[in-house]
Image 1 (cartoon, rainbow, N blue to C red):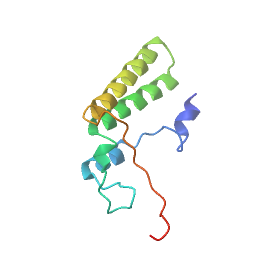
Image 2 (image 1 turned 180 degrees about the horizontal axis):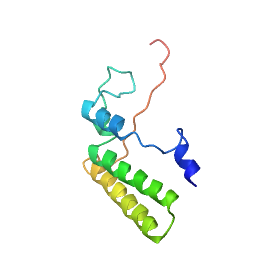
Image 3 (image 1 turned 90 degrees about the vertical axis):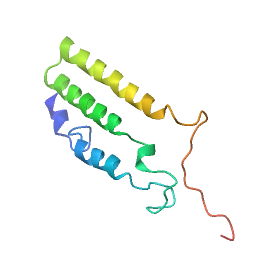
Length: 109
C-alpha cells in the first residue's frame, strides 16, 4: 500500500506550501489570460480549503500506512471537514450556476 505514497503524479505529497502561496498571491485567473481578473484564485480556493485538504491527504497517508478503524475514522472526519470548508467557501456565491469558460472568437473579431 505504501507504494501509492511514492507516486508523484497522484495525491502524495500534497503541495500545501504552493497552494497556500497561490491563495496568498490571489493572481488573476480569468479565461482571457494572466491579466484577466474577471476571476481570481480566491474565487476557486481558500486557505481553509488548502488546510483541510492537507489534513485529509495526511489522514489518507496514515490510513495507507496503517489501515484500521482509527485511521479510517480520521479519514472520514477530515473528509467531512474538507466538504464543510468547500461549502463555506461557496456560501456567498450567487444562487445560480457560475460558469467560467473560454469562448470562441466570432467571425469578424
